[in-house]
Image 1 (cartoon, rainbow, N blue to C red):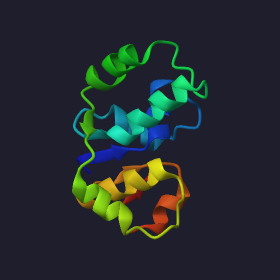
Image 2 (cartoon, rainbow, N blue to C red):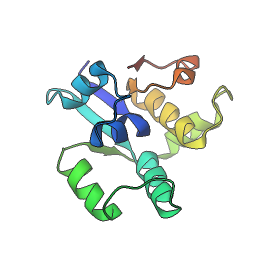
Image 3 (cartoon, rainbow, N blue to C red):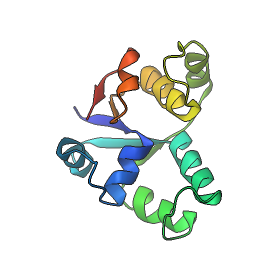
Image 4 (spheres, rainbow, N blue to C red):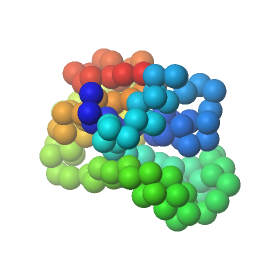
Length: 129
């Protein structure tokens, strides 16, 4: 595995050293030989949750983005029309719109997803934890 898409919670658990992050997930995110991707949808979700008070980053969003995404060389996966087309064709195994966007992006980009969410396995994508 040389590329991986990080689910929002996996990324946040890594950043904040959360005990629910698996050892394998920690090792994959820490491995400098693996290209890590974070969806723009994840960043949007983080910004929304911080703004409504459901997520405390301990810093403003701009600092968080600079220190934990840009400085760590995590590639931001943009949202493009093929991702939305894939999204529109996904069966409704998972109802969270942000997670469904990640699933669609993973399918289009042929990226495995690093997630603890077992519902992702219902889709035709590679999932690791």
